[in-house]
Image (cartoon, rainbow, N blue to C red; front, side):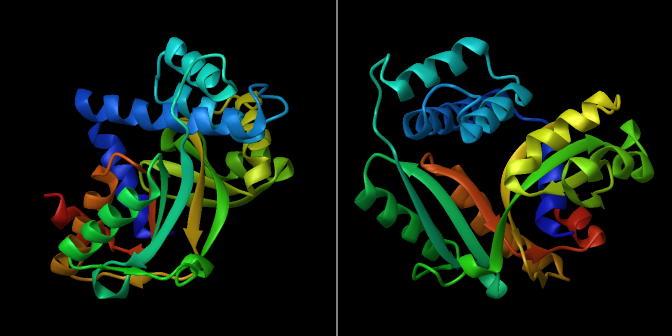
Length: 250
């Protein structure tokens, strides 16, 4: 289990402020729009769109916002054309960072992402430099009180679950990207509450940050990247021990 997952669990538990929620909705709308443009507006025939819509629903995004984003993607409403662009680099302490963006101006976004890295002590790398250290996976999050590990295994393994991790306040069930909806359905049919699903990039190896100063310097880079309007997701291969993570957010 990477510290990245634990870190996101803590941030989720703190709850999103209204401004942060509004920014999250804007990002989700952009993701839905791009998924609809590339694969069509039918969720049964477009699994990426289906995942993005479910992610938006889990975040309590209004139905009207979701529908407008789909229509912009299919051309029923006028919208901006966004391009998927990924960036790879390093934070401090040799931590690998993989950044997914949706941009309407490649040159502007590239220059700004490079600036975010260098301004916070990191560095932008060439394409392919760190991508090999990550693998695309589906992730299902379940409240810890909703089920035991045995219950999860019984309900999820036949549906395609690959791994179950205890993140403290939640369980994380990992799947192949194509199995995430089947696993969610199997859990819900077994009466197990699901908090959210997502498609993510999980690191194959991790860098342990065993001091608060190291953790803070890495999180400074990650936080700055996530603040950028074009950035949709940031993945990193750090692992922060629970005690260190608690001291960072104390």
